[in-house]
Image 1 (cartoon, rainbow, N blue to C red):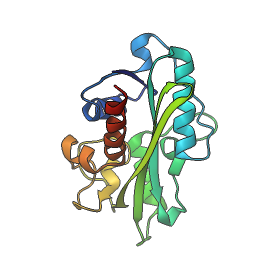
Image 2: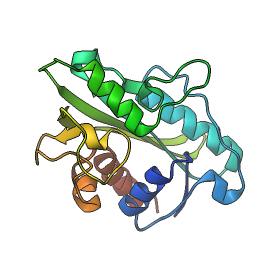
Image 3: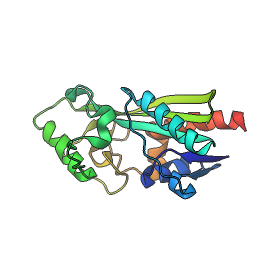
Image 4: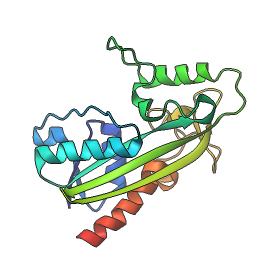
Length: 196
């Protein structure tokens, strides 16, 4: 099946191409479509559904959207749904991934309770009344400093509870097996098999 991914994030596209290897994954720019959706939901699932429906209304083809982020218990669940915008200002300043990681570590300075988890809400929108959703998590803790050269976003500071490695140290195959996006993608893949 050809699926349009509701993102411009090439890292997400690469991960999802591996997870959905039996399907053709495109992003809006591949179709010459400009896509920008205000994430006004209060949960990961609301934002994923909003992105999926918005893009579906533009392309009228099957759309896959995910909304994901990091939740840190000691920060009351922050950055949460604001993970991609963590530390950004209202005047348009957007932090880079390394800057966000530095800010997160600064906000946890001296904190010993460092449990955290990633969440991925994924929505497949095939028609206005044919919508499928799944939500998964990836348990771990925040490291004292960044480590590893792979992944993206918060991967260098997130330690996988099972392996003890940061997500940035995991190979793509290892990460897709244990991550929030990998787990959600496998469930969604099984739904796709039932639809084809």
